[in-house]
Length: 111
Image (cartoon, rainbow, N blue to C red):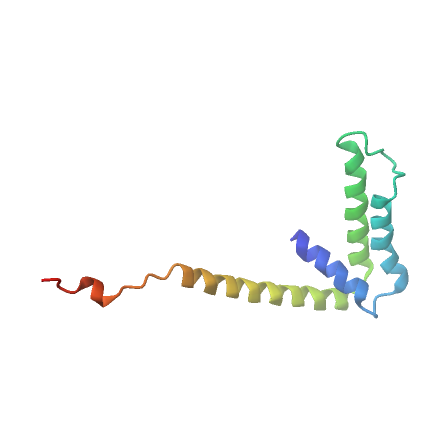
């Protein structure tokens, strides 16, 4: 789910129909994580990383919520179809790996 959310944000950032001012939200969140000035310093073990994760989460949520919903729906459907395709390929690979081949010669009389 997290990977699909990241991919959705990537698609939306690249889409020309999404307003540029909205695209600044994920960029600002990433900049906040990378800039050494934080509300809670990173040396505060645990708490320092919480504000970074919160900034990323809130910015991504607001970005997706404010983006044109027909575009969001289009990319969510695309991701769903890609997931179904990958799942189908994985299932096919699993089916092949679990196949037992029986050679008739192994059961022939050796007498």
